Amino acid sequence: MSVKILAISGGSKNGTNDQMAKEALMGAQETGAEIEFIHMLDLNLVPCNGCISCVTGKDGIFAGGSGRCIRKDDLNWLEDKIYDSDGVIFVMPIFEKGVPGFFRAFQDRFAGPNHDVGMLTIAKDIHEKSGKVEGGPDPRAFKKRFATFIGIGGSDWACRMSADFGLFAMVQQWQVVDDLVFTWAKSLTMEDDRVATIREAGRNIAKAAMDPSNYKYLGDPGICANCHSRLMYLTDDAETVECSVCGIKGELVIEDGKIKFAYPPEQLEHAHNTLPGKIKHVEDIGKNEGAFAAAKQTEEYRRRADAYKAFIQPSKPEK
Image (cartoon, helix red, strand yellow):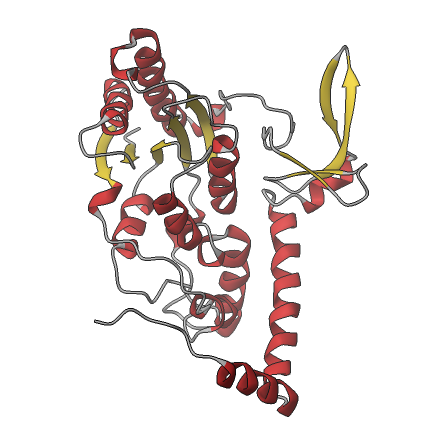
């Protein structure tokens, strides 16, 4: 079975991230996979501006459309590259313990509602019920796709990296094969053991794409048994703990001297990385958007909005 593996690097050009992305691709190529490499900083990717056209516009989710972003940059080109692949390897530098800002800008648009499998499932249903032949969500968005994440840090400040990657994969329900975070890794290219691990990660994702039925998660088991995250959020009652990635709520317990995250099985129905959990989230968003749209039609809302607009204008640099 022929598969295509894409590697996307977010480091400096020809630096460690690029080198390790290519190392992983060498491993994928050794298994017989077709490969492609993208240096992320070569692209023009602007931030999301919150216009929500992807949700409520003429081609938006709630109209049974594609939900494709209307901003004019390289995102749709990159989307096509990702959709045409069977597996994607992301190699990113670690900034402030997590992914860099330019990846987050990309994440806001590629892990937002217009790429969420739950949202797209709703859009597909609306489109099919409309009887239209053309349009609707891109069928490639529903393809089982694999991901491997590699974070490369210059120190040991890296505790948010895996969670950031997990949130990104969760939206599209990608199957994560490896999740590798390397600390104190400025000289990683010269460290043969670590380099070998990265090449093996390239082999692993290619093998998973070639034989999806035997997929196994090979990364860090983490604390959350559902999504493998180690990042937990203590809620207001100081007793309940919420997984910061999949949203499951439970408690921390001690077993055999080790901390464990325990949660009731019914919480899985609400998990952000399951289709039922996503559909519930979409329904909640729909209700909220409907209430907001109704509020905007009232005189009181317009009065308040006009008062804020008139109060002060934004400062801008002279050009």
